[in-house]
Amino acid sequence: MWPERSVMFHDHLGDCVIKGEQAQFKLAVYNLLDNARKYSPSDTSIQLECHVEKNEAVIIVRNQGGELPTGENEDLFKKYYRGGNSMNTSGAGLGLWRVKKIVEQHRGTVNLKGTSFGAEAMIRIPLAESDEDVSFAAEEDETGINKTLV
Image 1 (cartoon, rainbow, N blue to C red):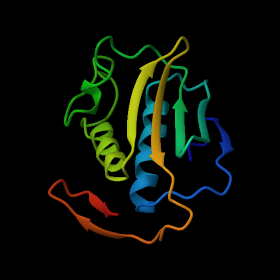
Image 2: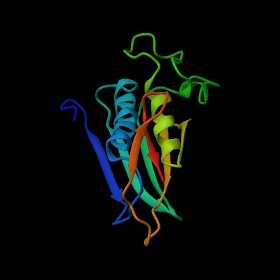
Image 3: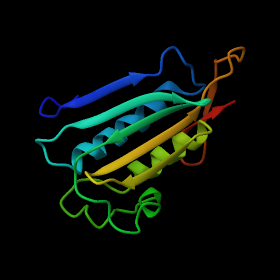
């Protein structure tokens, strides 16, 4: 993905299935990985951990960057909002907003928190029922994001 960066991937999802729009979900995860890269020193690794917890797929992206700006965790998901630590970093304040929209359209949640070593973003998406039809239809809503119909 980024030849200059190491991404440590831990996959414990097994053969679980989530219902949704694959391209949009990939975009959400890619954005979190890209933010982890942009907001951490280039000589540190990024961690991507995936596992199942109860009836949810849990995807966690961690970096070893600086602390999250105090009190901005929820604001970072607002459209056009850029954190206090984004001065020398490219972006328009749309990435995390878009991640949140995509995840919510997949009936999931996303949150950010600071850790002792950097930042952590966590996505939780409900698993598809075993007898559920995992096909989907998508349509664009007023935000320009494909909306998953369930």
